[in-house]
Image (tube, rainbow, N blue to C red; front, side, top):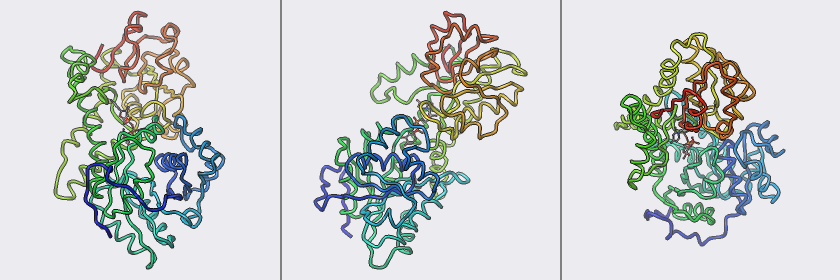
Length: 449
Ligand code: UDX
C-alpha cells in the first residue's frame, strides 16, 4: 500500500492510470440514485444495485421512488445515453466495476447509526468481487469504525483480490440535490492508499470546486461536524428569535445586522419551527453519543437537540396567545414535509406539531403538495385536505409549516373570506407579512410580528 501524505487540496493528486469506465452503486435511496445518475451523466458506465425488486422495476421504468425536482429528467438523460442500468443482481453489478459506492442507509437505532445495511452491502460486495477494486463509503458512517470496516473486508473478500477502502461523504440537500451534485461546495475523499484515492478523485473530473483529501476518520468527521454545525446555527437563531419575541426586537433585522459580518454570514440562519429531515437530527445524536463512547463529549449538541424539540412548542404557545384555548379550534397546517420541494417527512416538525395540538384538544387539518401520501402513513389524529383553500375553510388559525412557493402565492383575499378567524402563525417567516397585515390578518412569525 502506498501511504499518502495529506495535502489540503487535491491539486497535487492526478491519476495517471487508465480512465475509470465502470462503477457500481449499492443502494438506490436518495444518495445512491443521485450519485449514480450524476456519474452516468458524466460519461461513466454505472450499474445501480438494490435488493428491492419493486424499486428496481420502477427505476427501470424511469420512476424515481421519491420526489426530487429534476431527478426524473436527470435519470432519463442517463438512461437514454445507455450509461445507467438498474439491477438486483450483485454478479451483474460487480462484474466490471472498478469502484463500488456503498450508499445504503444508516438509520438511527437507539441514537446510534444502524450499520447493519452497510455491513450486509460490504459483505456481499467483498464475497462477490473477483477482481481488485476500490470500495467507497458514501453513506453517513460514524467515525472510529475504520478497523471494523477493514475486518469486514478482510474476512469476506477472496484471497487473491485487493480491496481498498475510501470514504467520500455526501453533502446533498434534498430539493437541490442535482445542483449540489453538479456544483458541490467541496468534495471530500478520505483514504490511505494513494492510487485508490486518485481513482476516486478522477471520477470528479468535471468538478471545479476544491477536492479535499484526508485520512478516513477526518472524512467521516467532516460530515458529522458540518451537519452538526448547521444544526447549531439553526438552534442558535431559533433561540435568538424566541428572545426577540419576549424582548420586542425583530429577528429579521437582527440577522441582517449580524450577517453582514463576513465571519458570520447570513446563510442558514432562518428561524422557524425547528429542523427535521433524515440527516441533521440523526447526525447530531450519533455525534454526541459516539464522542461519549470514545471517552470524549460534544455536549453542545445535546442543547441544540433540546432547543430544536422545544421549538415546535413555540408555535403552540403562539396559537394559545392568539386564540385562548385551542379546544375544539380548527387549526390548518400548510406544509407537512420537513422542508420545501421534497415529499420527505422524516423527523418533520409537522408531526410533532400535530401531536401537541391534538393534546390541546384542537382539530387539525393538514395539506402538502407532495408529502401527503407519506404523512398519512403516520396515522396521526388529523384530517387531510387536497389543497390550502380546502384546509382553510372555517379554520380558526393557519400555521405555515413548510415554505412551499405555492403557499406564498395564495389568493389571500380569498383565504381571509374562507377562514373563521384570520389568524396566521408563520412558522418559517416566509409569507408577505405586510400584505397579510394590510388585508386584516392577525399575523405573527418567529421572532417577528
Ligand atoms: C442537510 C444538509 O444541508 C446536507 O448538506 C446534508 O448532506 C444532509 O442534511 P437536508 O436534510 O436535505 O440537508 O436539508 P437542509 O436544507 O439542510 O434543512 C434541514 C432542516 O433545517 C429542514 O427542516 C429545514 O427546514 C431546516 N432549516 C434549514 C431551518 O430551519 N433554517 C435554516 O436556515 C435552514
